[in-house]
Length: 249
Image (tube, rainbow, N blue to C red; front, side, top):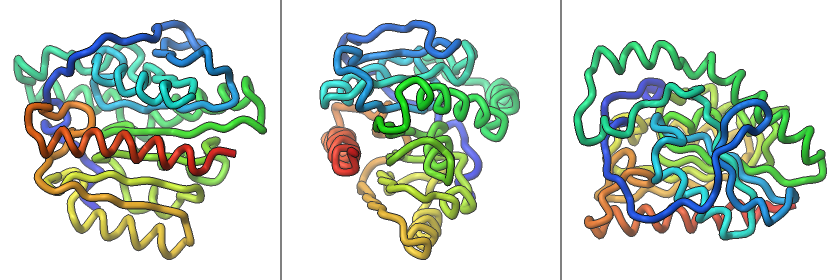
């Protein structure tokens, strides 16, 4: 499954308009963007972001939209201050520097970091509270891990995933929504087929939606002047809210 790599398509895109309403603060010992705190701790969403992390306003705006649906939402800084700089989207990015960055942030190593955040959140809110996870691009693999046995999440959603493998889909035990781009070398048609086979054979509740005419990154960094991209981005967010609401316990 070639989606276990990610490329320069992961650092391209557009900035979106709007002001973030949450705050960046220490949460379980690390920086995190937190929004929707007035909703209490009964309904929680953890977003594992693309390579730009909490430095990209687009990611914060997505969190705010999810919070508006009645959730407390967290975006942990899984890069510990070393996310890809937002300026790279307009100034270009050095492939050698990107390769070095990928080596520093190998998802296998970062997974222990994301799991600790989920474990700390679960301990904080208690076993009876609801935790869903959402992941875009680089962050999608951590959602799949969170949906494995003992992963800590109750349901999850991913959009245009990268750096995911067949074994991660095979390990999923909780409901999963996949929103995919038609044109995406990081999660191509064969990857989608293999993911569906794994989820179906294991009896997992799942939904896979493929949006035509859009490319990798559309749900976070898509060009909103393109009507196909605008529709796909907005529909993906609506689907994520509907999916997470459906499995609320």
